[in-house]
Every structure is written in C-alpha cells, then in structure tokens.
Amino acid sequence: MSGITSSAWFTRDDFLPVAGRNSPTLSPDTANRVVEAKKRYRGIYITMPRDHAVMHMAEELRLTALATPGQHQQGGRSLAPTGSGKTSLARQYQRVIEARQEHPAGSRPVVIVALERACTSKRLFSGILRELGDDFYDRGTEDTLKKRAYMLLRVLGVQLLFIDEVQHLNFRSSERNDVTDTLKRFLDDGVVPVIFIGTNDALEMFQRNKQLSNRLVPPCDLDPLDIKSGTDRTIFRQFLRRLDSELVERGILQSLSQLDDIRIVKCLFAISEGVIGRAVNLIGAALEIAIRREAERIELFDLSEATVRWAMAQAFIDYNPFQDGLRSAK
Image (cartoon, rainbow, N blue to C red; front, top):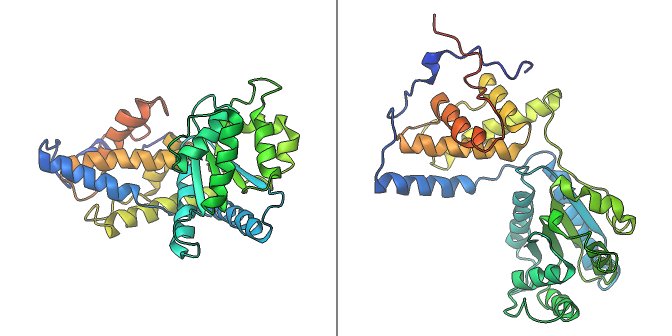
C-alpha cells in the first residue's frame, strides 16, 4: 500500500454512477430512508484488536473495585485523536455490562460523563450529578456537590466511571484549585474507579501531575494506525471488509460496496490518516449520497463526492485521493 496519494488505477469511467440514479432524489420518502439508514449505520460497532486492551482494563478496574469496596481505587487512561472511537468503545463496554444483568435493578454499573470546556472541580461534580439524574446538579458549593456526587454514585451502585473529553478539565486554573488533585482524591476516597478518555491534548495534564498518574494502571492510548505497518494495513482493510458486510446484513444496502478494494483502502487510509472513526464518518457521508441516489451500494462516485463535501470541507485533507492522478480510460 505504498504510494497512497496516487489513484492512477482509477479511470474517469469508474466514477460514473451505475447502481442508482445520477442525481439525488429529493422527497419526503428519500429523507426518511436517509434517516433510517443513518440510524442503522450508527448502530454498527466493530471491535478492533486494540479495543480489547481497553475493554480488559475497564473490566479489571471494575472487578477490583467490587472486590475492594471502600479502599483506594485505581484509574485508567485512553487518549487518542478525535474520531478514534474512544466514546463508542466506552458505550460498547457499558452495553456489554448492562446486557449481563448481573447488577441490581435500578442500579447503573457503568456511567459515562462528558465534560464541558474549561471544566473546574465544581463543574466536574455537577456533570457527574447531571448524568446521574440529580435535578439540582447546578446548585450548591463545590463541597456540597462533591458530597452529593459521592452519595449518589454509591446509592446507584456505580462500579466504573468513564470521564469523557478529559482534555476539557481546567487543570491550570490555579495551584490551589487543581482539578487533577480533585481526581486524585476521588480515587483515594475509594468511591469508584475512573477511566479518563479524551484527545491527546490531555496528555500534559497526566504528565504534569505524577501523583495522579501514579494512581493509574498502564495507559491504553489509541494511536492512529500506521500506513507503514503491514499489520495495521491489514487491520484497516479487514475493518472495511467487516463494515461492508454489516451494511448489507443490517439491510442498509442491498449489495456489497467492495470497500476492501485495495484502491479504495489506500484512499481511505490517506483521508483518515489511520484514524478509524474518520473513515467511518467518510463512509457514512458516502452512504447518505448513495441512499439519496436510490443506489443499492456505495460507489466510487459517492466516496469521491463525500471526500469533497465532508473531508475536504472540514480540512481533514486538502485534496481528493480518489481523483488524484486520475487517468482517462483507454
């Protein structure tokens, strides 16, 4: 898969729509089909090999907490670029634990809290209370919110807490009000183990506060797949093959789109830079275009259009790999 910026294998004729109309159909029925396709598409979750490490980390922290109630707890960390699937992975683990039905009725074994920007310690506890359903999550002093959060986490039987968008913690507010110290005390108080997920912008926070990092198990950061690695290239292609199959098995499309075609794989790798979530979003944009054309599968036309409308429009890439080096048909 060297030379990922060249699509010289493609001809102009390859981009002519075949499985569907040449232009979109604009009607209420089409809009409904797009909405249904998007809903089903978002329901697809494909476990990657590296996801298992995060799953194991979560399970070990949760089970250790159950075996050591009230004692100091450890935390975990999983940082990655935007679109790497960190939040989806946390939600998948949440679904797995809830599906086991091993927890008492009404309890919430796994909770995911997404932080807002510039999150202070007070906002941290407020966010936890809001996720737990406390109607007064924004009322009271920091100490009051902290006590209520601790109590509600115990009452609801929370076994593991994911703190998402951890890069939004205002960890430089002041030396007196350092959110990392709040998180350290949270683990020391033995309330519940915490897994911090977010972008690599949060790395400085963990590097700066060695006391917090000392309370964490080895990191499970999700680095982008490396185009130079044969293993990573295989993982990427296998992922696209499984995604293609899911699109058909879930009744979203009628036939396979050949997403694992080596030419398509090369272009998608270039656009996503090895970040799986970006490839998923690009294919999702192509899916919408295909559905509007009433096509039975995603074609090169749809992928190329999605690259321009989604990836290039949002500056993920400044050129269209599908069209780069395009040659005329002989």
